[in-house]
Length: 58
Image (cartoon, rainbow, N blue to C red; front, top):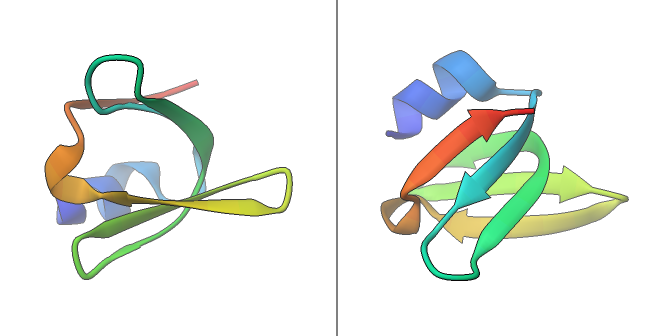
């Protein structure tokens, strides 16, 4: 999943679904060491890649 995200979504605006009410939004800043980093309004969100169920571009 990590290489897929880097290859297809780096620097793109995305929504990330992690189950239940857990949906995150932002621009993919980085994806390394099993962690996806999003940035939105100058704030970072770090998500464990193994918790991601779905990701899609906006």
